[in-house]
Image (tube, rainbow, N blue to C red; front, top):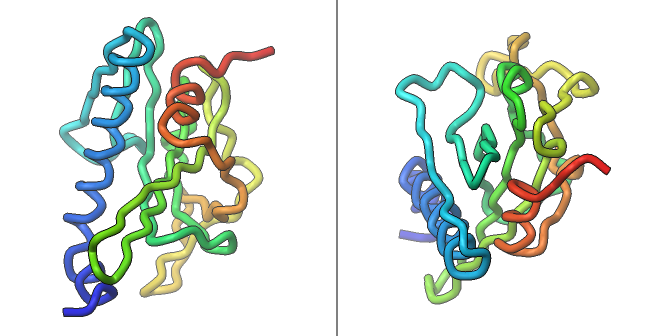
Length: 167
């Protein structure tokens, strides 16, 4: 089975695997490099706009997690407006680069959010549409990938999540 077919068929598995890799890398980096534990909170129901809560010290981030094969600046990602109701909310995009031989795998991280304590501002983005029905989704915004900041690996993501302060 070719890589594109396998990624399409197993997209839920791949997304969860990448999320777990990101969380494990954040926990490893926090514990080994910073001397801090990173906790993970997961909701029972997917209705709050975020996929997971990440905590470190006195900071809790509400994260909507997105993943993509490679980085495409014009691609638009659906972001739920309920995320903006959460303090310290953000979106993390993990772009995976897997070669067809399955021997090389890497992740690049991208960030959309505000400093610790502030909610994400989604007001400037267009209302998303359902890709199948083309109907508007009033509670979802279409955010282009170019709106995300490129972060420098897991250390850069850790800094954005737990150290990014106003001023």
